[in-house]
Image (cartoon, rainbow, N blue to C red; front, top):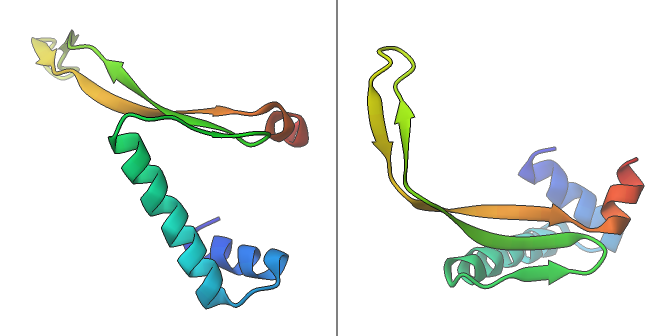
Length: 90
């Protein structure tokens, strides 16, 4: 499902216009991004939680040459699904 399909589905489910559904989705994406940039956690009970985890610097290998390379530290976004979401998929 792409963004346009998600907007259509949200509009149908919530009985709102596609324009309002797009505004709501865009607001959710912006707020989620801003919150994660601040390294805060977002917990949506039943759905799941978004958090930021620090991945330390490490030594890797170039697969073509086998030469060792330094991979810098970085922050990564993690999503842990909630039990209702997990149970609904299984």
